[in-house]
Structure formats: C-alpha cells, structure tokens
Length: 112
Length: 113
Image (cartoon, rainbow over all chains, first blue to last red):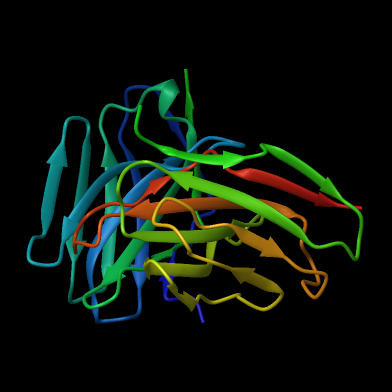
C-alpha cells in the first residue's frame, strides 16, 4: 500500500525551462511534506518542505505547492539547470509519529 | 563536522551470513531510521527509533534486526532470513521535533553473493 506516490518515473526538461515534479498521497493524517534530491550511490539531501497549514513555500529556484483537497504536492524548479539532474523523492510525515514515508522517486534530466 | 556516518560504503557477504551495517551520528538527534532503496521502489522504511532503547518496525522489517543502546548509534543487522538482501541501505536521523527534516548518511551498498 503506497501512501506516497510519484507516478512519473522520469522527466526531461531543457535547461532554463521549468521542471515540475508531482507527488500524490493517500493518508489525510500527513501534515508535513518534504522534497529530497538524490544522486546515485549517495544519501538524499533535503531540498524544501511545507507544512499542511500552508499551500506554498519558496526557496530560491525551488517552490513547493500543496493542494490538500486533492492530496497533491508539486515541486517547481525555475530555471532548471544541468546540475539539477538527479532523482527527486517526496516524503510525508504525520503528526504524532516521526517516521518519514517516501515516494518512489522521479528521475529528472535537465538537458543543456 | 556534524553528520551521519555509515560504514562501510560497499559490503559483500555470502548468502546465509548475517551482516551488520554501522550508522553513527553526532547531531544529537533522538530519532534514527533505516531505509532500503531498490530500483523503482523508492525508499522503504525498515526500522526506526525515537529514543534510546526503543525502536519500532517499519514497512519491511522482516529479516532485519536493530539495536539502540546509545543515542549516537543505530546498527542494522541483515540476517539470513532476509530473502533479498542485496540493496542500498540508508541511515537517517532527525530531532525529536515535528516538522523538521531528516538527515541522511551516504549509504551502504550491500551485495550478497
């Protein structure tokens, strides 16, 4: 039972354009959402997060949007750069527990 | 430098042998986690611990065991009962505070032959 889903396994975007990565979740108890970036054979690094009391959080080129009614969040990267090429994981955490539930990841390739 | 150290980076074991993966953190975090990454399956939670001497099973705990005798350390043992042990294993830690991120180690690639 996959509580956090990333339905697009891969995405290719031209350098300078916008990258939009999507994530859906099923558990309405989730109240904190995170995006991580991962290179092969390395640990994930934290990118940006959003609390369920907000619908948008921005940090430089990265913006995360949360639509609670649709149980959907997205990560926008503008402008995309070749160094952004990596696997991106969304994760969720529910109040009262400290465990993080991850999606299956989306491999982003930014073409120069 | 504060961080999470996983060792070794690469580990090879023969089928039927138990193997223990090390995870140490000096971030003073209360919570620690073990995840497993397989191609196309994302990060799946094996075990997590919110405090010393206490831990809970994650989604795929069968064939694994852990201990949390010290705040800094959360070793994972892959037993011979784990049917598909070859994978990339990731350890993480976080403060015991809601709405904060987890920090990950660099991972251990375990290959069982």
